[in-house]
Image 1 (cartoon, one colour):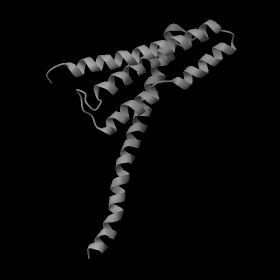
Image 2: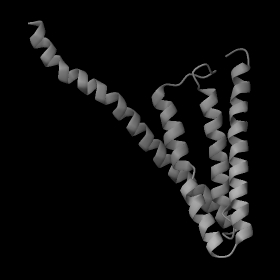
Image 3: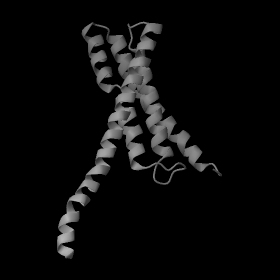
Image 4: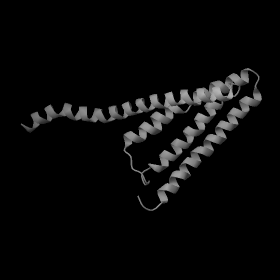
Length: 153
């Protein structure tokens, strides 16, 4: 009788094992959609406000996204102040931040600047993006680490 029950329950276990990864995939997909919409809105607003000669919108999106992933990653790490489950971490870090930040856009815009002979802008975009994004991921990480060190709730 036990052998028969194992055969009956085996598909149920496989459904349960499939459901958790599916939940994470759906969370990443939703986060990616939200991040992409936020990127589109912010980069468009910045381009409208400051012009499209230099890709300020992409730079601002990448800098703020770097801060968010650094901050959230440290704030919710294994020994951190705030506990969130694996699904929420994947939603924010892979989904939202992955959809929000725009490295492929950065690359294409830099190539277009170079192809247009705008070498100063192309170099400024590369230097600004790399330096600022590294600085802001670091600022996000140290900000969250400082919060993790605070006593109390």
